[in-house]
Length: 340
Image (tube, rainbow, N blue to C red; front, side, top):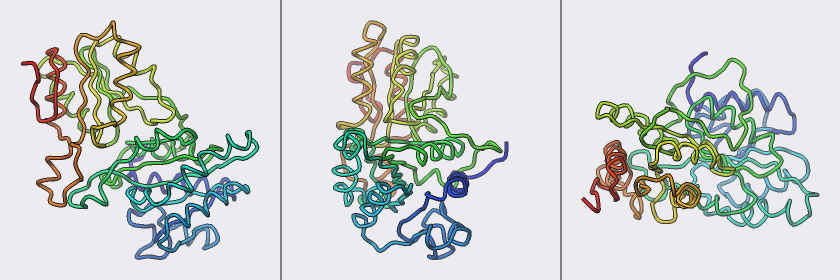
């Protein structure tokens, strides 16, 4: 299979869906004519030239305004893909997205469809500071009616985006800044990937590790390195958080008896707590050690890279979490086992 960047894979999926369905259009800030075109991360590059300004819409700097326009367009038969430049700016679209798009199909008894995709990016990327580095996926998991997608590889990004565009419900499609220019294999024919199907990225027998995006990449590295210490780690990529493939996670934990969950969002009330609770509820009798969370500190992300590195989990944090659970110890960030 050919290799391409995460950004290029998203671009290809958008182009193919726009060719397949004339009701698909894209809109957002600086996605068409700014610079070389294609927005800050080049995801929409070339689409304006190919499809014209009636299907590639540069918007004013008003997230609430253009997401509201996307909701309205979806209600009358279009399939808008709305780009919000940074996920931090989702704070500005809570009314149209949470109070309107997420509720309409339910409130109108299934008579209304809202095939809206909101694309944005999350996570820290080296010095973007507290207002451009946040991870808000758990906020939207809490809202009934919104699907939440977190692809890691270029192939998954493309396949899941196709599924999102064809879905008749609002989808929040969360990319990661550090993944845009990383390469991976993408099939010659990109097929839609069903939501709610986790993937076992690495099989193992001693510890189950659940992670997404950059934390998933670190998890795979940690698993490879800890194999030298005799710890065999199974790594699971949920791919979508809503719907969540809990059964794949539970089946793995029932096999390994241990569970680590890693995410870049802050620890307090993060999605690791939700999965951890379900594991403790449905697989308690199989657990040989306390569940471990490896997450960001409950702090704003600092501007300086050295301080950012203290807040965001790193490879050693994940390895320490795995070691702790393997030894049957409780764990907190920084590698300290609570009950040594």
